[in-house]
Image (cartoon, rainbow, N blue to C red):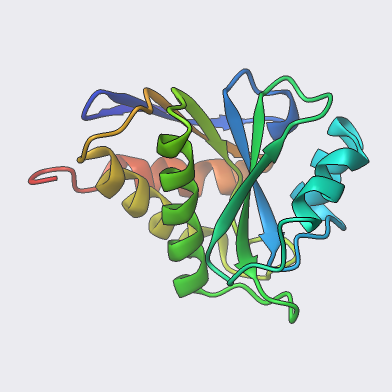
Length: 178
């Protein structure tokens, strides 16, 4: 599903975020930035351990914040590590909201045109995918109502349930007045 918000196309795509043709991908990180399983593990496996080394050199960070690293062997140029969890590895609505917002700010600071998000906090973090989708879509829509360099935002999901949750959230997002 695609939707245009402001001057940006927002998409929901099922697939491997590590192969997406975008300027940067977002990693669902912990605040110490070590890359274990889930999205982080896939990024480390596909892009190389140098991504984790660079990230950990910038940590720890505040939960809800984000930092940028190179992308190693990945197709994209940057990885934005969004701390949706602290060391307890538990995501929350507030952390997902803040991490999404921080990622969008980092993308604009780099003047990126395209960005792909996974379903933050829904794997290791244990947060519900429908709630995460609504939070993330709302944050993206709010951000795109302001001045941004982003022209494409992709929600990269791996399951049919997540695809439906993000498509539903995107279909029902309020963009008026933003």
